[in-house]
Picture 1 (cartoon, protein in one colour):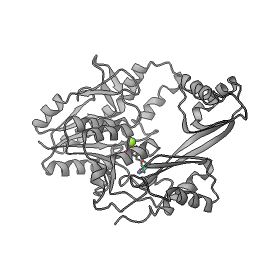
Picture 2: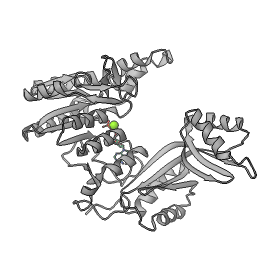
Picture 3: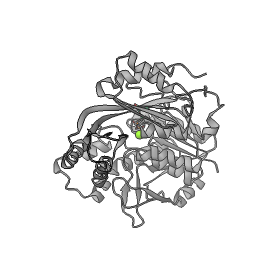
Picture 4: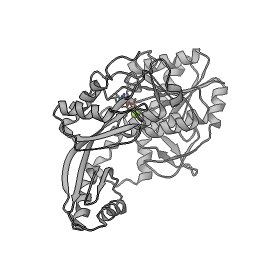
Amino acid sequence: MIITVQKFGGTSVSDEHSRRHVLRHIVREQQSGHSLVVVVSAMGRRGEPYATDTLLDLIKDNGSSLPAREKDLLLSCGELISASVLTSLLNAEGIPAVALTGGQAGIITDAGFGAARILDVQPKAILKHLSEGKVVVVTGFQGRTEDGEITTLGRGGSDTSATALGAALNASVVDIFTDVDGILTADPRIVSDARPLSVVSYEEICNMAYNGAKVIHPRAVEIAMKAGVPVRVRSTFSDGEGTLVTRSEAVRGRPGWTDRTVTGLAHVQGVTQLSVVTEGGPHDLQLRVFRAMAANGISVDLINVMPNAVHYTVKENDASKAIALLRDLGFEPRVRESCAKVSVIGGGMNGEPGVMAKIVEALTNRQIRILQSADSNTTIWVLVSGEDMAGALQALHSEFGLHLAAV
Ligand code: ADP
Ligand code: MG
């Protein structure tokens, strides 16, 4: 039995028209003789009646009065509706199908309601239905604890459901269907000439996802990488092949792989930069600052440490708490609000000279100031003011030729 897992995101199942496209992909896969597990998200986006955010709005006036356990019951409803509706469509088309909740499908999680971690996948029920020739429709984004409590997996959780099932079932591929043609060289909402990549490595897309590219959840990629299951990110609304995500050794030399230094760009908005500068200050300045942040659960990023200064960033939501903590320590930080972190990512930049020089040149030509930077062997991060973010992404995109079609 060759198994394919297909995952359809919110916009792919939002209305009758898009569900017809979903049907087309299911039929095509079935006709190729593969057994099919279909993971669905809730239908549509906030404002549409059965979207998860719309369900959340039902309780928004009650503050945080609903316990996390019950909140997960509410959060899990959208996928139940979506899976039932799709199953009904399949059956009406003469395609035998069965709908399973995450728990019924064997996704076992810890009890971290709202952001539960998958502990195990026990796919017995799925395998039974597949052997009877049915398409198995599974509600994404959710699982159950050993005790049978319903849990949800956090934002982007349906991607994780799909790759976890793909890993447990040893699927030949996990297809993540969405509303764009694949993984693009940058967020198309900001860089209009971003283009789909034909192939990327697990590491590259993980990096892009961790640095803000919302097209697939990084945890989903990690699970696929560990199991060695290939993933494709592709459009529900076309027949394009989309982007293949696979091992880095397999990426080089494939059609579509140009000898690229930079693969793509990603960005995160809403970042606050904090700088503490104390000439002749305490010798343990750095220790005091980072110990205070850690003790209060504030995650820090873009850390530059110098003998008499530390510069780092925090998420906007954590900024006022971080500033208060620094003042408690007797430091008056310089605060720069509304910054954006722009990431330049590429598995091929390792050891390649001149990448930073090109970044600086592209941004300087546009009068964009780099407020801070950092690098690893596959990523260079620059902090810019929020106003400069779109311009920075566009400048870097053309500097590295990312708008040019792959050969
Ligand atoms: P789904 O509901 O199908 O899971 P998402 O909204 O989670 O869809 O992800 C798809 C969206 O991700 C796209 O519509 C696009 O705007 C956004 N996106 C951000 N960065 C990228 C990127 N590098 N490549 C493709 N899409 C991206
Ligand atoms: Mg998504």
